[in-house]
Image (tube, rainbow, N blue to C red):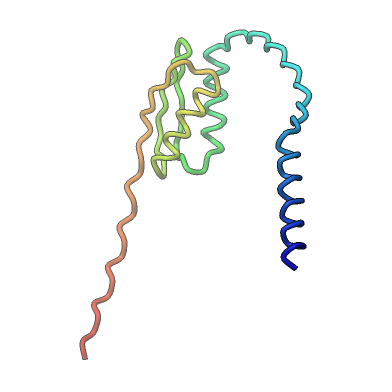
Length: 121
């Protein structure tokens, strides 16, 4: 029985060393993507329309508007939380604004109802 176990172990060890010695096949290299053609700069009106359209569909921001001058956007409105405010700034950048002034305010959380006092027996 010991000979069978020793033989099996030796066989496994030999196989492991043989596999470790073989070189893995190299995957075919993906061709590099061609550089994207530089986009023409967007106009202030295009950037403002893009931002306003996206703010209008955002349920976490109420009264969200943008004013754009020289590709610098100023955001106004009220956000339900800080994450929505940050997202609005990233949205403006994604629409083509070079600089974003985020004047969106974050709504204060609604006060929680007080817990009823525990009754003592």
